[in-house]
Image 1 (tube, rainbow, N blue to C red):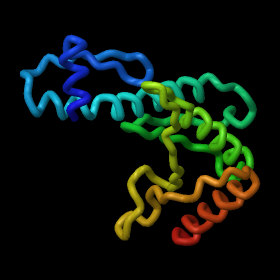
Image 2 (cartoon, rainbow, N blue to C red):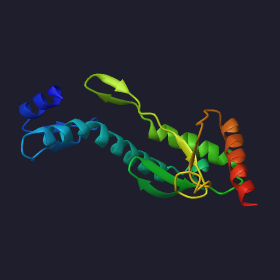
Image 3 (cartoon, rainbow, N blue to C red):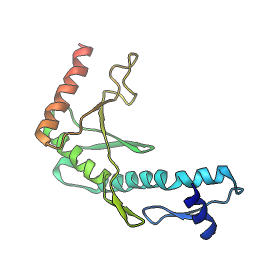
Amino acid sequence: WEAVERKLSKNNRTLENCFGHKRRFLDEWGSKLIKSAVAYNPQSTSVWVVNYAMRDIYNDDTPPFEDLRLHAQVHDELLFSYPIGKWREAAEAILGCETYMTPTISYEGRSFRIGTDLSIGLNWGETSEDNPDGMAKISLLKDAEKLAELLEGTYATFTQRLA
């Protein structure tokens, strides 16, 4: 809190995120402005990670990405679909997406990565009692073959409920 307040005072109310993007805070000086400033770096960094990943995924024309369809960016997540039955290719695309979504970031002499997770579902809603076919988190396995098996098994669970 105090460190951010000092940076604002020193740099004409301007902060720079991990990607070099600057924001000047023009609100009245006080706790509301400081809270916004404290949240700026983590929030803007995660948004830019997703933006750059989305660009790189969209531009990747290697085979696993050919059938990947980007449908939406919602806050810090990307929503995709992949043809049913192409489990191995989907797993390879997911692992490629993870690489784009978890770049090494440097800030003030420290390097770090922001983790990501994986959800799958038959609709974009969160899985619940009322929405059993919604997005359910699954393990983001690093082995494409094992991830493909997990995708297929999870899909089978969804479709068995529909039968």
